[in-house]
Structure formats: structure tokens, C-alpha cells
Image (cartoon, rainbow, N blue to C red; front, side, top):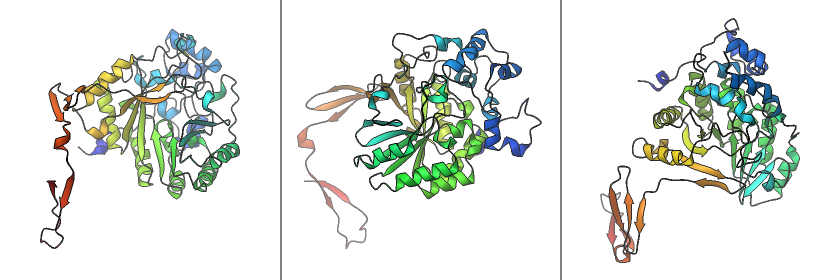
Length: 401
């Protein structure tokens, strides 16, 4: 089966069946026609009482916004549809638990300049907008994104750039927000140009869910800008295989052919992707789209997220269920972004049974034990013996001294 046969084009459903195809494929039309109100939703779906109540509250926490394209990926007959659960508010978002926070990963405490988060020595997070094409109900930055909480964030690009210029240890800049790909082409081009002019900046990344929410945005003009300033690395955000449409695959193809290396960051979500077969299906589709599964995040302790969070032990078990049963490239790193600002911490299944002076004893994916010797006598200097004048000069024979 050809890779393209794994991906279906998003069907145009009511109320958009009469929309001209050129308009439907115009990313600006998609933005202008987003679903942003309870009244619009009720014309399209039979909402549950929890969803209806959640929509009434959305303008006080995190705005409701869904692009027509992404909405059409929802199975409207399924109240537990995995895409529906990610973007339609529920009243549980109003229920704050003791362990939750408005700033769960401590970004505010690591922000020397508005819009800059400097947590790691050699890299910074540069928040360049508070807007997204659609809003994930578990968003870590719901205090900032959409401005529903009157956070009043206004990125100061020059102040952020000046901070980066003044700190030569910064070699890596991640553009995020909101979504950087909602910036105009001119603004994005200007920002990337300014970063490329800073000699100590080696690595530029973009975190974006635009290819998923609004694949029409990934057009030739945008790809030309990314190629011009490349390599620009990009992390997209796909949580469920139902998001992997033909349109998303095409967007990823365009980015890859423009020289943009792609990774994916998923969030582990209860009732959405916390089953091994669902996760395996997702990561296999990602590879077919030229996207490397990168991170699987434990859901952050953002206010009102308890109904979507899983037990972290589920994440460990899921990684264990994947290891040895699929391509190594397909297995993401399970991480917890430590509450309060500790940064990303990898959480792995424990394959090491013991370490002593003689050996490390391990268990493989089947639970079988294996021993690797640590005896210094067995690890003497290794020499390479190669005579370039011999007929088989490409043969290198290792000989223990």
C-alpha cells in the first residue's frame, strides 16, 4: 500500500458544502470563518450539558475557536470523539485542583524580558504572539493565549531580540506563542532575518500546530521564507491518528521539501491517546508523513485540566508497550515538564536490573535478562589495523592490544 493511501482528505460538510473550493483552501478564509461561539456550535453538534456550560465559561479562561477544516475531522455522531474532546470546552475546565496552577511550568519566573523564557543555559523560548488558529483545552499557556484572562500580552520583538543579542551563550531560539505561523509572511521573514544576523544563534526552531489546525497556511510563499532562512526546525503537535489527514500530509511534505526537519510533540490525554494501539497508529502515520515522533508529554498541571490528565505511570507503560514492537525511530521520549520550572525530565521504563563492579544486568522488551560485562580487563585499548596499500583497503580489522 502506498503511503498516501493511509490518509483521507477531510470531507467538506454542512454548513460549508456550498463554499467554493478556492475559498476552502484559502487559509485566510479558514481563519475568518472559525467557529467561535456556542450558537455556531449548536448548529453543528448536539452538545452535552457539560460542553454547553463550558462554552459559556470559555471567554473567561480560554477562547473557543475551531477552524472549519479541523472541525470537519470530528465524528459528529460520537460524543467521545478524540478531536472533539481537544477543542470543545467542558465545564470541568472551571474546576481547579490544589496541584494545578495558572503557570504550571514556571515560565514567569524564568522571564527576564516580556516574551522571553530563559530556563536552559544555551537556549531561549521566544513568545511572539498570543493567538492560535484553534485552542487546545489543555493549553499550558491558557493564561496568555487568546487573552481571555486579560493577561494583555503584547510581544516586544526588539526587546526580545536585544536580549538574545546581549547573551552570547544563547545558541538556540525556539519561536512559540500562540502560534508563530499566524504571523504575516513579512513579519515572520523579518523576525527570522534578525535572528540569522545574530552570529551566536546557531539553531532556530518553531513550535506550531498550524499544519494540524490550518494546513492551508503551509503554502509556497511560507515555505520559501523557511527555506531562505533554513535550516528552520519545526515541532508540530498531533495527538491522535484521526488528525493525520491528506491535507496534513501534504503540508508536511511541503515543509520537508523546503528543508524543514519535522518532529512531533504529543500530549498524553485521558480518553484520547492513552492506549498503546492508538499511540502506535499515530506514530506510524507520523513517520509516513516524514515527521519524527519526538516528545510524549505528561499533561501539565494547568488549571482545569484534571479531566484530561492521566496517571504518569500510564505513559511509562505505553513506552514499554512500544519498545521492541515498532521502529525505534517511532518511539517518542516520554517527559514531564517539571512543575514550577524544573524543565523537561525524561521518564523511562526501568530496563536496568542492577549494576555492580562486574556487569550491568538488563531486561529487554520481553522481560529477558542480559548481562553486559564491566570488567576493566576486557576493555583494553582498541587499535585499528589497516594497510592502505592492500587490495582490500576498505577493510578495517579491530585488534585488542
